Image 1 (cartoon, rainbow, N blue to C red):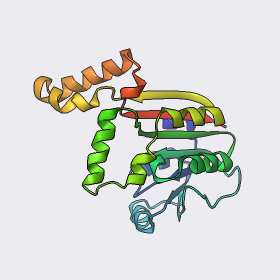
Image 2 (image 1 turned 90 degrees about the vertical axis):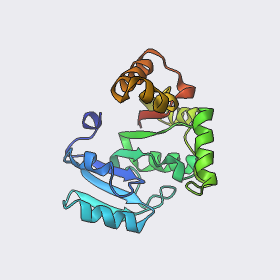
Image 3 (image 1 turned 120 degrees about the vertical axis):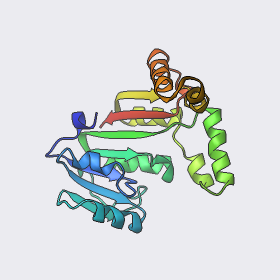
Length: 202
């Protein structure tokens, strides 16, 4: 999917890049990648991880990106949308994306009550902040992106991911994976899914 939209001559912005867990896939395309994150430490680790002149790291707040209007051909976010105010992040992405540019996001969806409960448990354990939980992407946010941009496609995954630990014990990991994948293909149960991929065009 990345190779379909990210090309060698593209200027690519990754927001919430962390330590580069997904940056390597962008660099593999040969594109010039600007990886940003709020954490200077994370970007320092990333800089040591990748030794290439195709990568530029910069500390940046995704709510107020330090780039000029229409700077990037592609913007990518992997699991980071909940770390900023949804409306501000949306508007900043739209601002710095070139006309006909593409925004690619993969993230967790917050509509399933089981996943929402699990995230709240992590909050009680001190593993997540309340603001991150409240800003987790949901179907309403996806609709906002669809209204601001031209939606190319949205795919949903993990309709029954919460059953996987039990299924692994009964059917084994390999069979469970096949069952989950087949259910995702047959049923588009948006409100129960765990992950989504959305691609929109300006």
